Amino acid sequence: MPRYRRVIVMSSPLPASTALLVIDLQPDFMPGGALACHDGDAIVPGIAALLASRRYATVVATQDWHPAGHASFASSHAGHSPFDTIALHGQPQVLWPDHCVQGTSGAALAAGVDWTPADLILRKGTRPQVDSYSAFRENHGPDGTRPTTGLAGWLRERGIEEVHVCGLARDYCVLWSAQDAAAAGFRVRFLWDLTRPVTPSGDAPTRAALDAAGIAIDRA
Image (cartoon, rainbow, N blue to C red):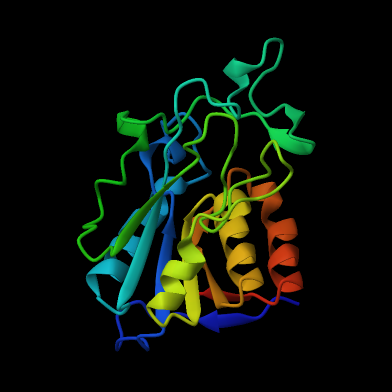
């Protein structure tokens, strides 16, 4: 069974060896956006409060930042519709609506958060033919590998041993980021209530995947 731990947002600072990762908190993943997560805007106040509390000495935010015509867009594949799955570079690829296109309002970081505490804003999904769910690694590329983003090394150089992850979407980018953080040797806590899924039906598999990776699930 997944492990649950109560999280109190407004409390004393955490150890300097613990970092917060805020994944893809962008308008395109919220109601009215191109790829809206279920109830995606509901987590903005909680994440804003978490950053304002200054509990974390190190904060990283990621930003989906696709060029127009990205390979993950259904519009780039004739005869396909959003949420179809194809093979891309030998791996399953969900085809998405065009979203988080570089420079658009939907790709901006959420306006309801003061991002001043963020030490790093990492843009991902920038290569036209390679998707990137995780903050730590791109998806499989043409050569069959998953190149690193450099985030793991950046965190280690700052003495980070544990990461807490939140943001959008629970069943894709936040999940993959948590799994890759664990695989890179970090202790990981998944701030469940500060995430939302593309589809709620994916929650059970997400919990199972987190448990299999030894990742603690924190509930408020």
